[in-house]
Image (cartoon, rainbow, N blue to C red; front, side, top):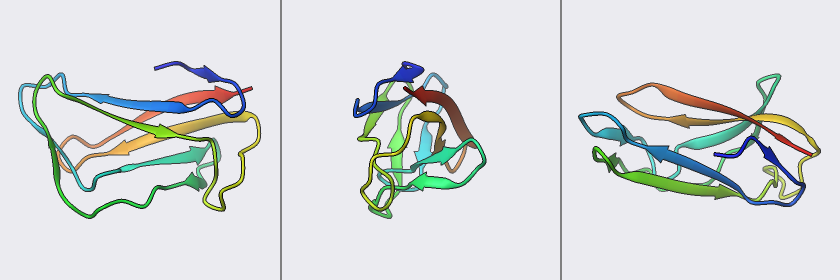
Length: 97
């Protein structure tokens, strides 16, 4: 994953299962974007279904840099957080310039 994006670039989120067992996701889009202070900037609407990511599989999502009010977020640094049911949460920091 890149760690720097230009304003209006699509931010791609990628989960690769490098484990020997499946990763179980709590929904079809179990991710959110947070500010460095911890406030939720964006959380997608998703189906409340369990999603299995088998060993060696990957799943991708894209964020258009819009907040929950559909407005462009300001330049700055953010965290993408992907939650799982059986492997905890994964956090990735990136900046928008």
